[in-house]
Each structure stands twice: as structure tokens, then as C-alpha cells.
Length: 264
Image 1: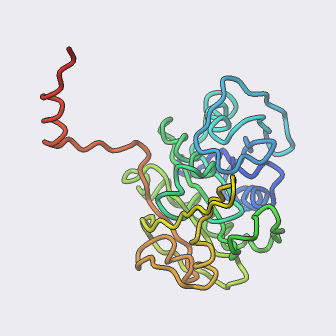
Image 2: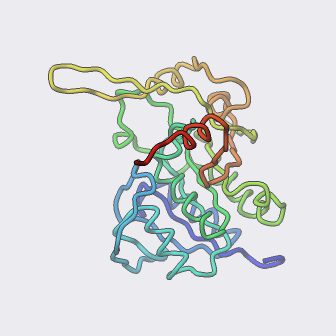
């Protein structure tokens, strides 16, 4: 790796034709050998859903997969790009902020999947200031809006592997503001633990919504300094160093329950 271009497997969850995906492909091609292995269609919010088999199509940027982001990573590392030094997922159209979002996001889940192969990964998303009543599918993003996401992803892909960053974490969750906000400094953060999901019942219909989008659009958020959401609202690029395996803490209370359990 030292002195050579990294082999980069690029995937996402918005689909291989998305504007943000092409923006990262173009930017990363300046720092490494990039191969696309991405879903053919939108796979947003599918988490780490996995398939038994998937169909692969050759594509001008690499490969398009009829499957999920996790499918793309497994198929990519095990079959299509076995020499990958780095997996990058994104750029997602919309932020992936807060600890409760991480498991839902196909973008973040692709990065998590890579870490089980011991391949470092970066998940990249761009915050779009919209309110709850505006669907992301209705938002048309300009390629230029991804300039900050391109800049920080290229920087990390070019420097993080040799810096020792991935000796202390498994993957980076990166969230950049839109470029129209101006130059964005980088802030090392941790995922916010503020939970803003709500549900409203009207007749037989229950609508689930995340109240944080309205609060972010107004700049009125409860998240403290040092969190990912606070950094992005303040116009910074949030970079959270994260580990993938679920943690387990041994404690006396559960030991006592186990000892008292009668299987008879």
C-alpha cells in the first residue's frame, strides 16, 4: 500500500445512478483505483439486509448489483474486488446522524459489513436542510452541492490508511454540509444519543416521523457540542470514528439471573 494507489470499492444505498455516487466516484478516482459495486436501484434504509443470491451487471464504472448495500460489499470483497484496501459508501443524499440512525442506514451498514472482512471503511453522507414534510426523493441535488463531501472523502481516503486511524476504529461515519454553506472545517465527533422519533395516529393510519429534521432546519437542536448532529448544524464536517461489532458487558445482575434459572 505504501507509495501505491489504494484499491477502493465504492458502493452506496441510493443506487448506482445517483448524483452523490458519481460525485464520489469522480473525486476518489484522483486518489485511488475505484471500482463501483453498487445497487441498481434505491436501497435506502434497508440496514444490513442480505440476500441469498444476487444478479450482477457490468457497468461503465464497475458493477451494478440487484441487491442491497450489504450484498454489494460481500459480493465485491469476496468476488469482484478481492484486493480492496478500502470500502467507501456514499455519498448519501441526506445525513446519517445520531446513534439510532446507524443501524437503519444502508450507507452506514455497507461500511459496517466491510469491517467484518477486516477492510477499513468510510460511510459518507451529505446533510440536506429539509423539513419532515419534504421527501428526500423530491429533492434534486446539484452535483456541485457535494463539493465538501468530495473534498473530505478524498482527503480521508488518501491519508487515513497510512495514519493509523483504522488501528483505533473500524470505520468512519462522515457527514458533510452542502457546499453552498461555504468551506467546512472537520470535527471529530460521536453519534448523538438524542432520540426524536414520533408517531401520530389518525384513524387506521399511524404516521412515523423524525422530529429532528424540523429542528435542524431551524438550527434549534438539543444535541451538545462534540456530537455529529451539532457539528453539521454548525457548518462543520462531522467525522465519527466507530467500531462495528456489538459490545458485550459482563455484569453481576445477569449472572445472578442465569444462576437462578431453572430449566426443568
